Image 1 (cartoon, rainbow, N blue to C red):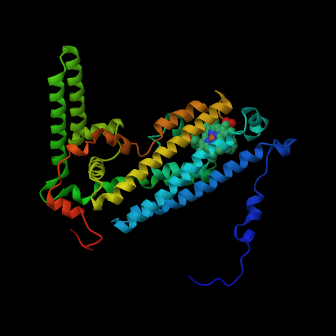
Image 2 (image 1 turned 180 degrees about the horizontal axis):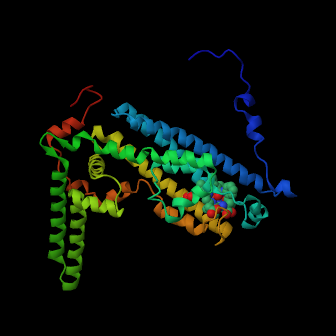
Image 3 (image 1 turned 30 degrees about the vertical axis):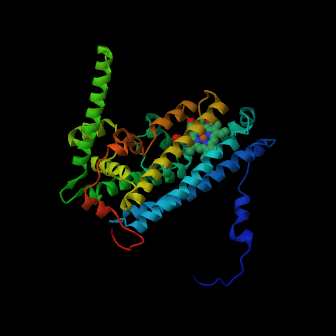
Length: 366
Ligand code: HEM
Ligand SMILES: N[C@@H](CC(=O)c1ccccc1NC=O)C(=O)O
């Protein structure tokens, strides 16, 4: 790193003149300044700064996933950066409580001056959604067009261009799908797993048959087992899996789902540790974003009741629905459907176990 030759002054370095001159309450232009508008502006600005940092991390992660191969060093960096994003999300979620110190009545003192602006026009938030993998198809109906109609030309063009690029979801799917150890010499993970699933379900069925006396209850419980068998069967049969995908029940490709499952079931194998952490971090990211949506929606209900939003949506009702629909990594949650307890899992064949293990102390594969 070259040495700096000029002395640096705190406020110049941080450009505080620009930053601290950027809070201009609109209520002041129309008469008496509404006291709480300052808080409203600052809270939004802080969010936008954190969005900027999160995007900075996600763009870097995106670039790593773009590489044809992701080695352990790159995977470590991805995991490390995702951990930072998760911490920022915690802060963003806690910060909702600060805007909630403003009462609905205090908000109404300046709300009319905001029309027709709204969070729909937060380009950074929309970039975050799009970059992660929210598509027009997966958004809730109102949002497919709506927020685009409220943007200026430049912003709309920017987001539309972004929508055409591969998303983080696409890249994660491709990374998982190309996982080499899913099939290793004569070993095929899905054959082994399918056998274990059938054994587990047979054992469940036996317990039911041996213990349930009542005819109606027996029939009901056996139907439950059959439903589980069907769910699992879809995982192993390409055609049924594709049907699930078309219905929108799953989004990950079959190969990616199987890899994610393999990694999750055997995450203590050294070669899988980092990959599992990355999968888990994406699930957490999705969960924390959903929590933010929910907290924001609750706060909006408190502020507005059933009033429509300045951006033209139904307000609270629209925002509540985004918590269910606008999810990106939901498959990592749905994957739990297919999990078996450790005790029901077979030992991996020796040559596969060896391929997955390495020892720091020995400096070589064990
Ligand atoms: C008094 C406080 C707030 C109220 C009453 C409020 C209300 C709303 C409403 C009603 C919408 C739906 C769009 C519309 O029809 O207007 C919305 C969207 C949004 N708001 Fe807020 N909001 C508040 C604070 C915040 C804060 C502090 C942020 C932080 C950046 C934020 C970010 C967003 C975003 C990103 C959206 C778009 C969400 C999506 O499309 O899924 N809002 N807000
Ligand atoms: N949509 C809100 C207004 C609002 O919250 C807002 C207005 C301008 C800039 C940012 C906003 N914050 C988030 O939606 C409302 O309907 O009251």
